[in-house]
Image (cartoon, rainbow, N blue to C red):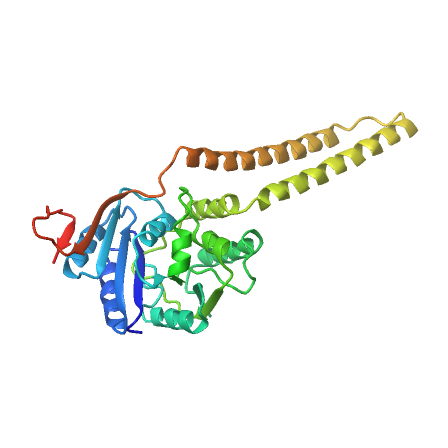
Length: 324
């Protein structure tokens, strides 16, 4: 364990009530390792920034990144991954739902199985019904889109080795989805059961809108499966329309007195029109993502970086660097 350098990556958002306790607990739990902690403040509007600066000032093992605005959890994680230096990197939430002691469990499983990634899973999640249903839906869809194995639970609490981190950070687009980037790079993935605790002090930051945006990122950025589905459904509708047209023509020839039904016409127009709008919207989503990528929309913007550095003689002092 002493030969391993461990990086703990914590995306921080409005966690002034928990982040200092979490960091202090990690220092107590990880005394068997050489480790660093990378805090990434994703545009918090509470006192998280002041607390993170104070933590970085107190300990040379802490690097603190202040993002210029709220970019989203996965973008904040990408910012952190670009600034870690450990042999293994553990991503942990800032709300104590992932017990700090479980970091040891993830790292031991990673080493024993020689995995690229180890996910945590829970025998019982202590989230709201809405969040649990959202997680189940996310895992079901990921099985089809990302070719994830059915029995693997995609948790935000996971451990990555240096190889997979170096591959993930090659992605420079503005819409990262960490699990999608992982499954794009490796199948050498393990999992280990850990405890799941109740969220401390505040509600989840993932609103329904944010979850939908996350799902769209997964659908559009890492798979063309939705386009294939729309093509298949469109083909089915075309053949249904063709068969219906043949049936109506034959019926009209055999029974000339049958009146044309306005209801069936309206149903056909609404059905096909609605499907066409859905496909156009899907294509627009793909094109919109490409447009934003071509415009070099930033994945994240670091306003300031706080860290310790050994000062050389005659070197100009930077106010964001804590010299030792």
